[in-house]
Image (tube, rainbow, N blue to C red):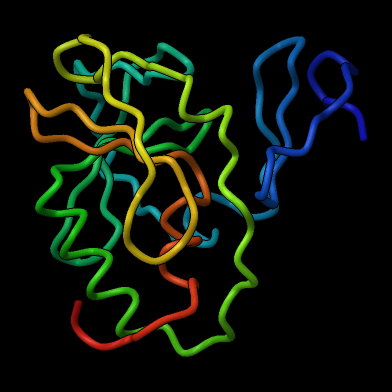
Length: 166
């Protein structure tokens, strides 16, 4: 599959359903922004936060009625407070009624990626997420923020395990 922008080869993102073009740094997703694995509803406001992957301004959006996030319209990653992330995970895992995803091993290369915090621009910590789902979580202890790449929240929501309040 080739990129529609530059005709470069689209690479599948490890363990995900989307593709990335190394040549022009664009992503191809299987669904529109509001229809994806975890729909983000854009709020129409640009922030001063910078995407740690694409280095573009993040936009305000929401994942649930009560939780706002800042998301990248290019790579669809998002940042939220660590506390809000816990609320989203609890609400969405409890509400999810589909089949469990088959667990995939953690990609150890992700532990070696250190991106800048969208807020303070200091390097975030990369560490395994110790809840349901195998993924590497990027957090900024200074700002109390967590960054999730596209598809990572869906991995947590659809991981095997208890579905009640966590």
